[in-house]
Amino acid sequence: MIIRATAKLHNISRLTPIRNESVIQGPLPGEWYASLVSTGWKRGSAIYFVHNPTMVMVIVLGKSIKKAMVEMPGRVRTLLERKGFAALTRAFELDTPYEIFATNNRNILSNMNQMKFSLEYSLAVEEELGPGEIVRIEDQYLNYLMGGKIAGKDHYTRPVDQLQKLMTMDIG
Image (cartoon, rainbow, N blue to C red; front, side, top):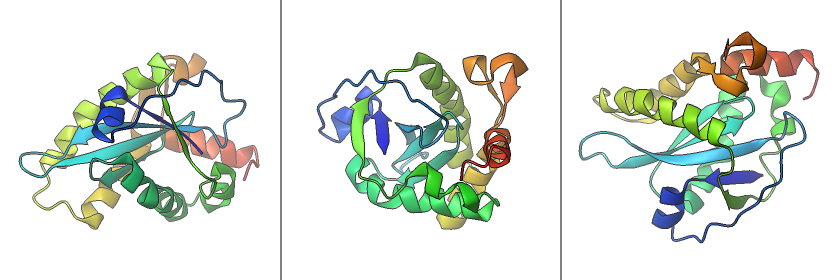
């Protein structure tokens, strides 16, 4: 599993950024981009992972990417099963060892930055930030509109649309 973490996340986790310019070959297993997001006043931080090319997003509370990688595969698996995409779980290769690299795709980062503003607001307005609230926010972001090169000729797409497309391709 390839994880591409932002420079800030590398610094906080005390990791040296490693460049890997390889381009993903197909839609799955893809690669995961990771960045830090504030959860609101005095509640700390979280890491949000966004899958390239499906743009599926999961949230793990905390600042350390190494600690988050223990919880992240389970969160992805649960999200896919909860939303009816369990057939794709194996194709995401969540049980493979992970490698952490520097980011290399400005298009994904620009979408993540747009998502970050909305996500910070969603996290900050929650009175409590427990597992139920995180699940609800992850479900909400399956319908988040993405634009740019990710959407292609359609101009806009949603992560749920990308997953449905993969289900029709019988990739799982």
